Length: 406
Image 1 (cartoon, rainbow, N blue to C red):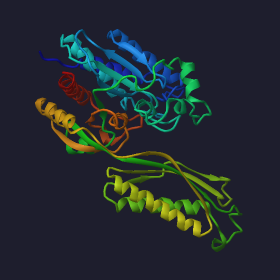
Image 2 (image 1 turned 120 degrees about the horizontal axis):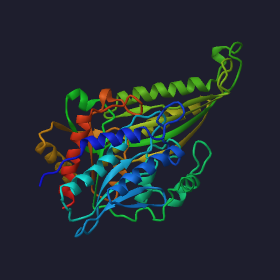
Image 3 (image 1 turned 45 degrees about the horizontal axis):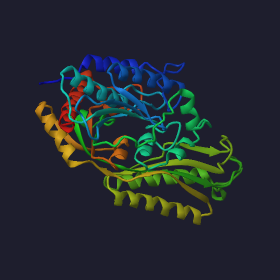
Image 4 (image 1 turned 90 degrees about the vertical axis):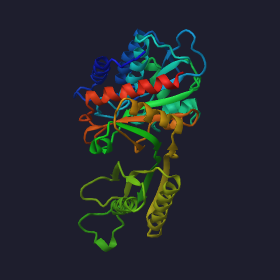
């Protein structure tokens, strides 16, 4: 029997969830464990229960909607993503994958198709890492990469503690993370990049995902008067930071697959007429090849050593480190086959962004499906994917789920 996603319902839910948790300025900002996050979680759990799913929550706040029809047994097929957002976000990132997972289950229910194993839709906690670090925290804890107690003790950018905030919003569940063992995991996501749109492809079959290295660098120099200190006598931490930034940019342009970003920076004393005595900035290095990523890290470390030789005080702190991931080739091939059966164009590709799938791949066969992003824009209120592309991707996910749940 054929089955299809209720496209109109999927789009309506995306818009309703996207209207939930906006701040006083109308910005979508559902950072993990905030009141806005609670609003989004409450709405999702309402929809899960309306679909007669068993809703379970673990200690780190991951939400599971479990469908185990009569006769289904064994480890479940898990589909999902996250619903927390960055500050001033778009409506699709993460949410599309979670709501499409729910739509898949509802489509199978409507067509009276019963899988032989359970299907679970999951919304992982704190994927974005905006309020609490590291990002992809809920899935990382679920696979044992970070202890539950350590994660719950994390202090956020606003001085709050994650465990206390999850209790406050009512989403500190009873289950130990990892209580549910996936048979396989599939995540549907907007690309968050320009490739599919530029090439006119409908579907991205994601075969691997970049490794990520996050670091915080602190450079100490000497504060002095901006007008009376000759250039030759300065020990300017701001200039040293600028040199690091320029070095990283040039390095990434010369290494295959590399990207490098300094996304945050601040100076002390941060005054217009004072030479900076301290520069503190973050470094984001990525590469789909582990050896090349290590080379990027070593190159940065060597450059910082040279700054030390010039008399700067330099500290380097690792914030997060995730190795590149190669997704399960059988699931990747299944996604390709299902896309071809739908007569949709596709290409294999690498994910430049981090996703919960890279964590779940540690414990279960996993893969991802991408749909196009207009102008490659994400983490931005102008983030957009057409309804037709969203529905097409969800129908491919449906077909993949039918095959993997049998």
